Figure 1 (cartoon, rainbow, N blue to C red):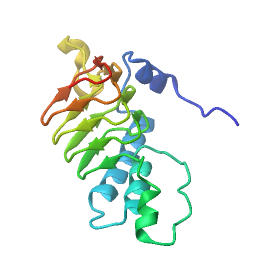
Figure 2 (cartoon, rainbow, N blue to C red):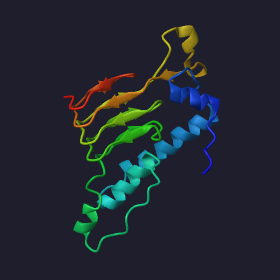
Figure 3 (cartoon, helix red, strand yellow):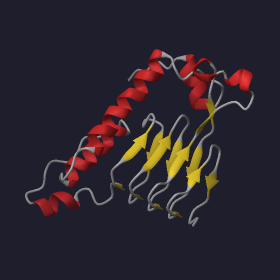
Figure 4 (spheres, rainbow, N blue to C red):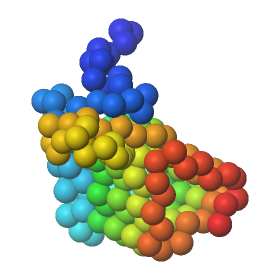
Length: 180
């Protein structure tokens, strides 16, 4: 299988180096995720299977869903390890977000995943939790609005953590296993 082409600008973004966010490639990537989030957030009363499929679309997970089980209860049980995500969610790229098994994400979660953001297995998030892996230069001349570069740093949350409501996790933060 061939490795997909990654532009130098996107490679800089993923490394946390200065990059330009308003290139056609990155605008299209954010738009793809924005539309996936809109579908997830407006889905309404859907089955667990449908919710998992919508979530996987956000994070660009192409793992096939298992064949449907004969009853709704058995079908829902097929997804007991998948994360539970309450709408609405707001995610920048989706492709740089890794969520472990058994994770619960409450409503109004925001993830700016310029760089990798990982949430360990069995972690619980309260409402309005934000992960900001993206940031801007502090020098206003370099910052230069939408014409200037951005940068970021990875965020990692260990397994079995609990992050209460209204918490904002900033670029470069690493929370160990069991953090609360």
